[in-house]
Length: 309
Image 1: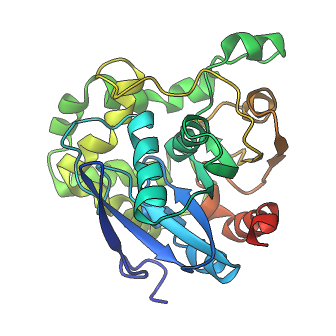
Image 2: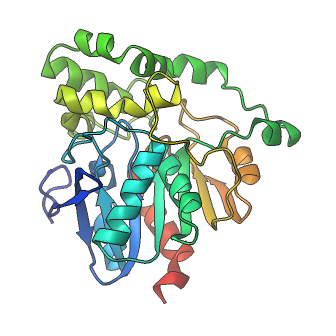
């Protein structure tokens, strides 16, 4: 394999999916299909430490760039919401690659996409592994379990980006008026903005993750889900985000994350009826697949091991 920070570390395939060209990596062809879905400010590169070990463990590892991200194309229909991404994943894994079922893993937006995918297409996701991701909107159920679903003070301070990217993306983009400024803006989420465990990303790694967003159209597209979530732009359809999920779920939580609810582990116990965990992973924040790659790889291998057989 090439150097860990090389964009050419893995061969990239492309497919036309629902009118959008999706770029994806596929390693371990013939193994049990395992879909790895990134969030924001991520691309498929966030999985660079997971692809090879999971393929060696017997999985067909499928790692796409979501529509509008990195090497994937922009969406002609303009939709970048959770449901649009979930339908893309079903079409890619099922229609293009020919798999009737799969397992899936992801954090951030990717975790939300996986949850929608499992509910929207019953039986398609046999097991899911979620960490530090957006959660179903179940306010009454959380409150009944004694969980306060409102964000904590540190979370509110850390999520200023959410409001700007969702409510005034054009104005924010105009402020980031050079490739250097866009690179700096995104790389900061891997550093001082307290998403990651301190020291998990050096400057080279942060810039490697941020580099695909220097394209202003891709940066704007990546913000599309925030606008949809805040009601500032139209959604393709209502997300499956207002119900519990019976998909067998392994939940992990990196506590060094300041943008996901501190009550994430407790919320998982309400949201997922077939749950293993949640387990708190020390030394991890928002980017658990990079920060504690070996631990996640082994967790996936053992939680999904029965599917390999």
